Length: 197
Length: 197
Picture 1 (tube, rainbow over the protein chains, first blue to last red):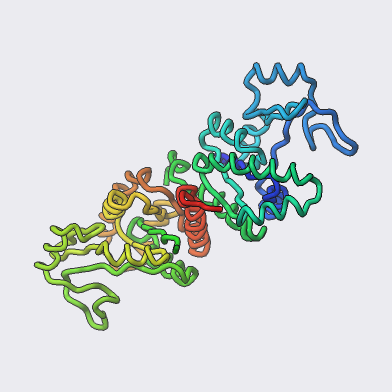
Picture 2: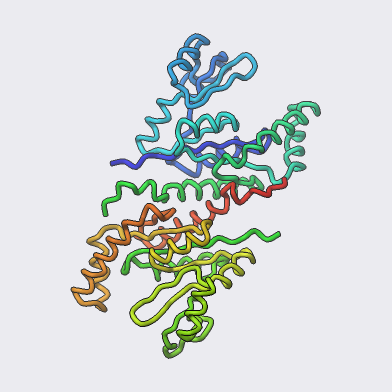
């Protein structure tokens, strides 16, 4: 019998470095696969259906919501984004771990549907540092930076509903901590329930 | 403020290799200190009070039980053994992690007094292997080996009350897994309750 994989949800404020940490984590953990989201937004240049996203129509997305086919979904402006449940569950059943990089609201939706999911909150070393990282990207206006910081403070209110918090001071250390969390979760006695030694 | 250390309880059947794993773990984790037990048995050659054990009289031990000074204690034949609570709590308060190598009954006593203790059950790869290891030591009679195996099967009934299980197939791997558990436990959001970022 194959041991079921672990579903890892990684959340954290805009600018904390989720993308960089995720990439480094996927590099370091060959048993970890990233989940592909479904979206109603049109594909951009170079995006492939089933790789970047599953591109679906608004109607199809609505049907999927009604059919309870999402682990979580959200509307961002005019577009819908969601994590289809089936491919995630199939990957876990094959013993692969799955990484979901989603916002806190999405993470809590996932925990509600799959309580065995492991929720990790990526924290900045400090607010000052987060502000500096956001401003440093240069892609947002000063006003947008302030909006994102406020949103981050709101998200942080849900920290205690997450299982783990990892401070992204150095990417390598954050990745090591997340890998340790995955290793530890695989040692939980609930996973030894059918133990026959 | 110093972050409180983690109390790690390591249990497992006789012959599983607790001692070897503990030694390797202490080598690898400079922040981990082993707890010193109190006992009523007389010191043997080369044993130092406060290092090998705290050697105490039967009367003193009884007073300590009455004063709730033990995290756990047990009687083995004519002697008493126990883990004094104060030195453990002082070490944890200084930010050091503490390792307790005790039996399952003791582990559950500790969890009862300090629910934040992390209970790890060290498992043999198989019963056959455990039997072979016990027989291979040559220090027990065939009858004693069978008695220990039966005791191990009884202890294993409590596995689900432990937090983690680690299979001691290779010492290095078992040590790595226990180190990951310690790292992961330090990332638990309960430990970020007073977070001011």
